[in-house]
Length: 212
Picture 1 (spheres, rainbow, N blue to C red):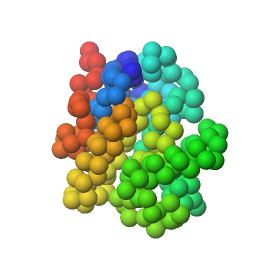
Picture 2 (picture 1 turned 120 degrees about the vertical axis):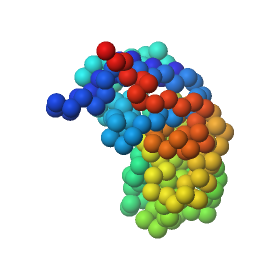
Picture 3 (picture 1 turned 90 degrees about the vertical axis):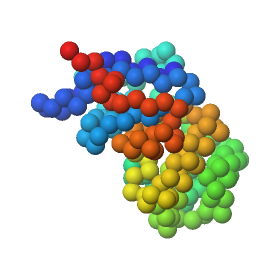
Picture 4 (picture 1 turned 135 degrees about the vertical axis):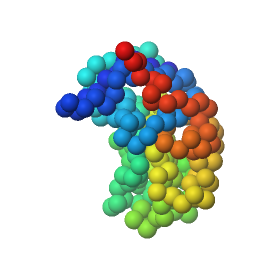
């Protein structure tokens, strides 16, 4: 469903991605492993449309989206630092993408209620996100991304900064949520245990690069 072919990216003299290719099938959860600074996040930015590669292509459902603008790709992204809107409530954060897509009010409300239940924060709709714990904020960020039912979700080290017990709990919750919603996902991480807990398949960035 997602096809990345021979993507290369350089910043000045530094080559970050060298002819990287990776496939993610419909409904599959793939973990991309690699050390910090290896280019994993750069690859996600290329797929999301936040960065145009020097060469190579990205296709979704057999359609080339390499130069397509971000908002037209129907791709969701969860960042390391959540990037929630601090002036909005939990419910307003989750419904943001739905509002941008023009969903009518009653339909937005039903979808937000459904997602709050999925992430176990039913009573948090009116709460300001600035008062959330780290784990709660990560749940809200995921719900906001899933709300418009994107074709694929990209997760950039989504469980960074949590203590081990909460990290492991949320890894299991994330795996269950992605599977229960039949969400196709690509998650980048440097944690092999996290990858094993969440993903159907794990690949390393080095394995995806075409070497001379």
